[in-house]
Length: 202
Ligand code: ITT
Image 1 (cartoon, rainbow, N blue to C red):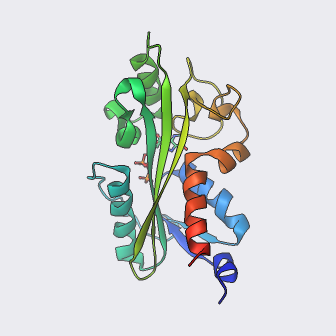
Image 2 (image 1 turned 120 degrees about the vertical axis):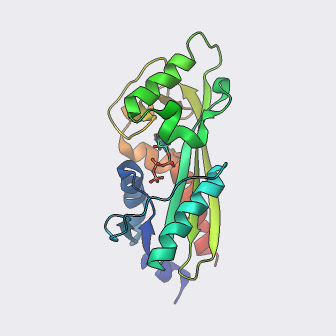
Image 3 (image 1 turned 90 degrees about the vertical axis):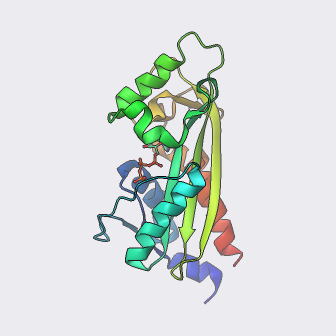
């Protein structure tokens, strides 16, 4: 089978419990003909502990845990916001920053941490671990540079989108822009593009 044909018939489980991430993978991959199945839809309720110290390690942990149960192609995603003036925090702890369970509270913690800071530089990082049916894995990382806004703005997206202003957004927070903007420019879109390039060249 030709690669282009194979690429149109991919079936993959997204090893994530994050509805925002899963939606973004669907929005990018389904128009390409991929069958995108969430962990939940696959009937898997494993939520592996993220014991790694890097995005790459955690992405691999998540991919392997789901692959061990499903034995099929898996995409796992470890991602987060690194804020320079906060020593690159929240980073790999973005989903549990300061032990806070609420997304709004975590955004406020970042904004408070930056009170009075001149440097609001930040970047979103997304590491994808693509695990093949045979268990071989490949890592792809996308980075999206920007700054942290002075306050929350916008309703779209998830997580830190209401406080992230990417360098290519004309000064608007990601959450204020149409969803299609992220599909094209985000850290996740960049990592997916690297994955697609890899598959295309196999
Ligand atoms: P899974 O591990 O089940 O995939 P999670 O939300 O716990 O879900 P991570 O450990 O990778 O995933 O944490 C990622 C966090 O980083 C996420 O919860 C958001 O707070 C933030 N984040 C990542 N990508 C983001 C994006 O595109 N927009 C806004 N926030 C994002």
